[in-house]
Amino acid sequence: MRILGVDPGLRICGYGVIDSCHSSLKLVEAGIVTTDSSQKIEQRLNKIQRSFKELILQTKPKVLVLEKLYSHYRHPTTACILGHARGVICSLCGEYNIELIEYSATRIKKAIVGRGHAGKLQIKGMIRRMFNIDTASFATDVTDALALAVAHTRIGKT
Image 1: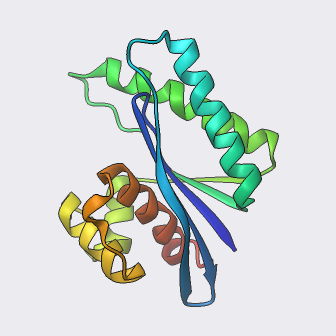
Image 2: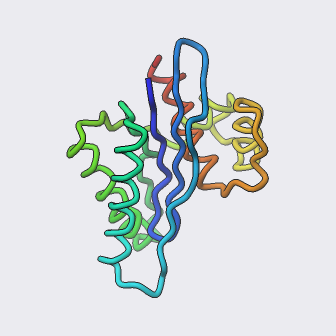
């Protein structure tokens, strides 16, 4: 089964596509989609939409995994901004009939590292070992997106 993990943001969206067959995982593609902060929000969201539409058409995932949205009361604007990018991605799931799954951050970390409060470096290290890749050049958004996809194979029994 092909799984697309997405770490959405308005400035940087990380993504990771993996194939899961029984207990075997294969990295298909990973990267980021960036937008220019000097552009209007509608232009930025359009770029995210076009980029992920192209990625979906190329990789044909069956499942798309997002982290559940968490909003701290001191930073409500952050949740709103993330909500814009997430909305575009969720809409694409509907358009292309892709199953949308969401897990909490602690659930993802526990599935990857074994602890629900693991740090970003621990996640990055586990992704590096799982796929035998050099993650030094990967943005944290990419390893987080790959962690989402991998977590689904462990939690969702894919």
